[in-house]
Amino acid sequence: MVEWWSLGGVLVASTAMTYGPSHLVLKFGGYSAGQHWSHNARLVATVSGIVQGQPYALALALLLPMSRLVHSLWPRLVYLAAVLLGWYAGVRLIAKPLRREHDYPKPVVPLEAERAMLLRFGTSGAMLPLITVGLDLDIRLLASTLGLVVTSCALLFWAALLRSLGLLGPLPPEVSRCLGSLPPGVRLAAVRSSEANAVALPIERMVLITTGALQRLEPQQTQAVVAHELSHLREGFSSVLLRALPRCIGVALAVLIALIPRSELLLPITIGAYIISLVLAQRRSIRKERRADRSAQLEEERKGDYARALLALHEACLMPATLPKQASHPSLYDRLKAAGMKPGFPRPAVPSNEPVYWSFAVSAVVMLTLGHFAFSERGTGAVEQTERAAQHRFAADEASLRSGLATETWYVSF
Image (cartoon, rainbow, N blue to C red; front, top):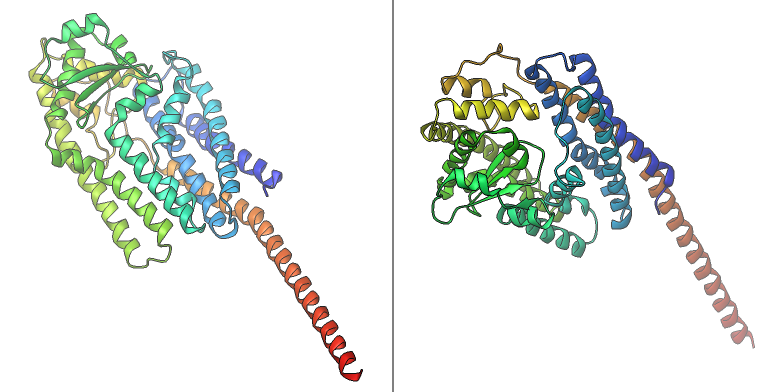
């Protein structure tokens, strides 16, 4: 049974916890069209951290009381759908001031952002086992299997998933001609997205470039970016495995929690392995990115093409010019200097993660409190109903016993 007042509370809380912290960051940080793009990018990076992590923080905080007090899968799915709907409403609200102050490109395909969200949440395999914690074993086994399958598909068939959502297509002929010949077995494709970016898929031997990047880069700059991504395709299997290891361990951790809730020894070991894999993947990624940057510089037709391409991509999408030490990529400021290009702006501060952590903490407290009052009432009601049923059964058994004794006494006296 779903309580509508608690469902509305979850919806409103998810919207407020997504929009509120993001709005405060933009307001007190001074986000405006008059600021340099590197300043606005620093604030947008903090807002992106809040927006991207908030649905997981809200859902996990709500799952804690649900795993103890809600013993049916259907109500859990309804409440989690309310979390996602409230989060989506908060994202739509915070997108208005972002687009008002910055000339973001228009979507390339209808519902572009919604398709990207569907792809992202659809490939979050670690959430599936966690939803079923505390339920019957067959449901937990099914969810764990689905989580492993979803994660495997996301790692092995990312391009196919993009194509299924209508986000993948061929490169324009003029771009293909300027890129020239490619290594054997390598394919290029365009992602129908207004975001300016490029990515390499080593398992599928593909390089993907967004249409937003193709619209902003000159042909020589596009060629340098492709050379950077081709360098990633030449990485060994160990590098590919190390990049995928944190996600695989994360799913394994979720499956372990779902199937063995009281594994006091295995949980710390798995969590430790997850943290170690994150650190190793980050360090290896930094080295590979710097090596790919050097490969792109060697393939330049004109000196500085790759540096100008990096600057154009970061400025178009307001990606921060400086990154924290635990990031997977070097900072743009350092990459420009390594390429021999002097940045035309002072080195900005690293995006702050404190608002992100505070927003997650407040969201967890709000959802835990709301879940406690909503689900404990349902749990208490269920317990009372069970006790009343047991009392009725006991009274009926007692009445039957007395009737039997009375009948037996009558037979004896007769």
